[in-house]
Image (cartoon, rainbow, N blue to C red; front, side, top):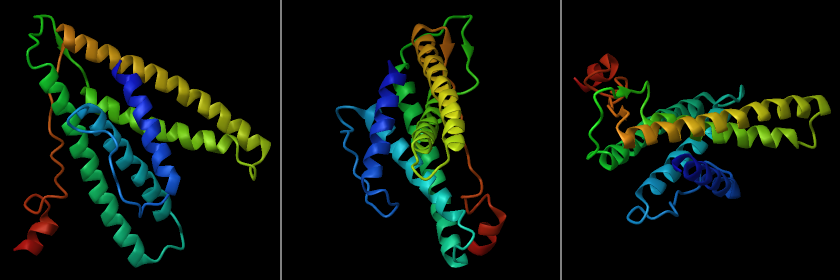
Length: 203
């Protein structure tokens, strides 16, 4: 099933990142695009999310140098765009997979595409990883660890529910009970023609 594959790849991507555990490390995708295009995209997606998670931690340092914070904000912006692009590539994969499917007359559209649901699954993998770390921190109080364990249990249940929903959605698309219709995100603030500040600088 797609969700199980995604969850396994997300866990691997997070574990691989944590070996060096620095945003300065280079990225190398271990999953070959030609033999496993979906796996390749899923690994890249979670790696982007993992790096951005670290960016978001760093930028919240109240003592961060303003120049460093601005440079980091630029990296977060670029990461957000990369994340969006990768999600759209994943949806492109599914559109290709289902291009020969003729939806039934009663077919309905889902509120989100498969890739955007998988995007939430990737973020959930990171929440689970970091919450689990909190449950075993040696410098944390028992009450803190107990509270985090309770939150972890909820996150694990949420992953199970979301995984089932994703697999059902993909099965429904494959059988013609649902149909895909993908809208580009059309982020305007990165476009020097649509963002008035950037357009002014360009002119």
